[in-house]
Image (cartoon, rainbow, N blue to C red; front, side, top):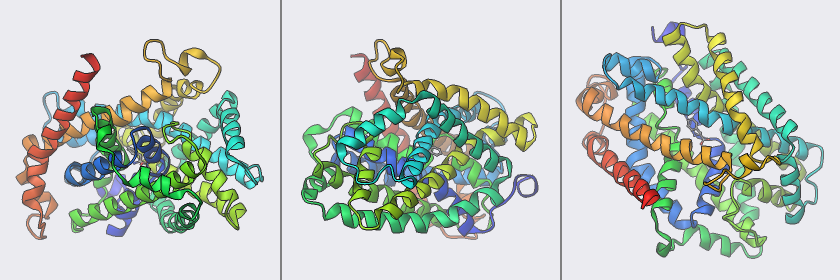
Length: 454
Ligand code: PHE
């Protein structure tokens, strides 16, 4: 069941590449800086790192193990262990969350495509920060163009997903990582040598504990899950393609290392550049698009690196959108018995419809721009609800499921390939999955809800 009909990763390296392909994406370069900027900078970064180590990595191991054990999509994986009862709702939540996140994630990916074309056609040449903002506003406000870009990005995603897992995703991931890293290093050097860069570094690296509140904590934890593609079954689906003989903990540790370093680097680029231009770090989801073009304009060869960067970011986004759609698609294949093509198409079409109100958040339609009562845009609501809350809830129940229903002893058998392989941190891992992770997530979610109402 596992290997023939659903594809198998070429090697452990293949899994690392593909899982990193899912993890590394707009979440690192677009979302991480904007969430950090809105939440006070360094303190957010600190909590994000702690969340990755204490909860993220252990849950990543749990998800991957569950996937490899069952060889199924999230719903199927849970049913394989607990056929009866409400647990399979957790799998459905994952499928739903995947589609919801994809709906606005693909919109931002569409922005990246748009900026790629702007960069290629010289529209970003000699751009200043004031121009950059105007450009951004008129671009995101062009509703028809935005719907076209969203559709375009979803179509490519559907195409890759319908071709199947190993001959699609893995190939993309291979070219991506090295190329992206090289351009990031170039950007990093330029950003850090800008006059006034130290203000950015201070904002990004020196925590101000007076800013500590529950919103910062929940955003940082949510970002940790989002960035590692956790809490919605994505890594269950990917784990189901990892071979039994590969060492699971080290494979996942590599994914975390790649993902976290790229996010940290993105912050090191964005904040010095942003603050040296006197821009507001809390300006929201547009900061990457407002800062980077200006930075490229200041780099020798920026007219080459700019387009190349946006192209690589498009590919990084694609390897993530593919993983988001893969969850829903493999659910359709395994549980609804659809063909891969049909499943990808249906799920993609639903996603497009859900995405349109997010696009309208930047239009003249006041309702979507500023939702009544909430006062934030439809996009902002979706991003908070699914990227932060839903993933945290998913991760919580996943930890409980693995810890208490499947049981860590069984999970450890899978992780160590029936004891044939060593897992030095087995005890710490069990404690994290059974106690530390769930307790922390419950406490944080609980405080958040309390704050919302009282
Ligand atoms: N981790 C991806 C990113 O950082 C986004 C993602 C979230 C992908 C959840 C799959 C599942 O860009």
